[in-house]
Every structure is written in C-alpha cells, then in structure tokens.
Length: 178
Image (cartoon, rainbow, N blue to C red; front, side, top):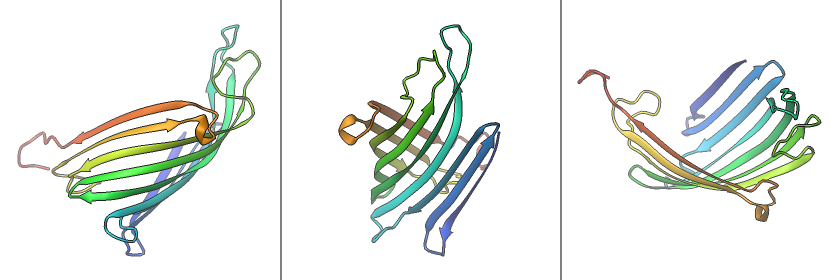
C-alpha cells in the first residue's frame, strides 16, 4: 500500500487547518478530509471535523482454520468542539457517526454484523501541549488523555469504551542541540 497526506496549517491566512489523506493498496482504499479552526468565534473555542471513507479487508479464521477475507466499508465523520483553557491546556468533545457495511464469508465468526450497521460515539479529551512547534519541536512536551464511549443509547450497534493516553517528550541526544 501507499499513501499521501497534505495539510495547510494557515488556510486563507486565518489559522485554519485543512488537510486530506489518501491511502491505497490491493483491494483497500482510505480517504480522509479534515478541517480545524483553533480560534472559532474567540480564542477560547475550537471547532473542527473530518469525513472519511475506508474500504478494507481483514483475515479471520473460519472453522477449518483457513483465513478468508472479511471485506468491509466504513463511511462517516467526526465533529469536534472544544475550549482552550488558557496556557497550554485544552478540552475537546467529539461526536463520531459512521456506517459499517461488512461482507462476512460463511463460517467466519466476527463481532461485526454482516449488513449495514451504525457506529455512534462520544469522546472527551484533555490535552496539555507546551511544545514550541508542532512539527519539529525543540522544547516542551505534549500529554493527552481521552475516553471514547459507544453505546446503543447513541444509536450505535457497537457497545465499547476506549481509553488513550499519549505522551510526547523532547529528549535531546546532545545537549544544546535541536
């Protein structure tokens, strides 16, 4: 497979981030478009979103031990809102809605329904980012903690929770060098 991603971090000179990604491989494709406004209506609010399409395949063993293809398509989006709390602190709330269509070969046991289903979730993320540059930082750190919950109460076929902790630190190999 191969892919290409491009992002403009100051679209129209307004500080908006606009980007896209394309990935393709044998029988698999993925597309993603993203927009993010870090100063929506004020310097304290953020707004963003993304749309994506994935066509892929996974290999699940069947009763005989063979690995037939499980083909699927996912199409959806994520709406993001949040607040800059001052300094380096940010809070984000995301809503994700996507359709999932899977073609499951006979005999394969998978936790995916074989017809059109919906995945719906909310996530909450806290982030502290003190890096002096997001692309090539020379000082600072970034830590974030997020919780995502999918539930039938949100119209989702899939019940789940996901917890993500990320930590990025700058540790120079040679003192006084970037």
